Length: 327
Image (cartoon, rainbow, N blue to C red):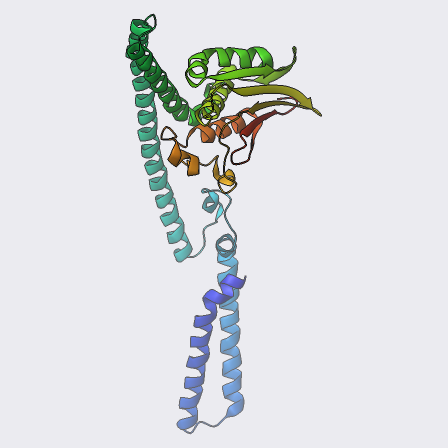
């Protein structure tokens, strides 16, 4: 209603100005019958009021829709036919909506093609990496060891690209099952033994037997790998420990990963889960990409878990995955 009156206000002002000018012309011409002039003005005003009432009634759904905040892109389809202006605007909106859907479809097709290409490329790159790994895995000379370390970095980088590409289609590629937390952690740490040996960091697992969680093994293993890689990467002292603690807190199951690394500055803590954020440590350690913790948080959110991070600069960091009950 308010929008209708705002829209008609210039028309009403123009009408009143025209009425005043006509009255002035009659008065200057010598026609001085005030009662007849007032009667004519009232009659004309009544016609105007009826016209505005009919116009509002005809276009009420149109004005109401303009005043409301739409909750979907198809909301304009509920507007009933009204004046030629409203009908024209309706056709324009529908035409723009069709063009919008067409452009969105084209962009989505490009994104799907790009994602498919990335998946295929990652799988193709894994083959030569596996072949090179087989060629050097039984060699103990420094050159072969260095090649093996670089292959491991390449493999983790490819995995990060693959999981980042699959994140948008997460719901099509996960299976929730009951897993033993201790066995899962031991499996992941065993797959990272080369990293532990190279950096002289020792995993210490303090998880009671029979502590079960409901999650997807593949996705959570990737999250644990990212947390382990970060923890070991920022641990500079030799013979440091990386502790894995599992316990229940109320109805929740918690997995803590505590390192003895350089810690995270307090100013960086609020942003460590942002994509591509590396912070002060990232400028000191050149291997940082700023994507590991971001992907870990996104995957945990999709799995229904919660990830937390506590740290003090120079005092190590503690990553915590909280498994909600019934998940």
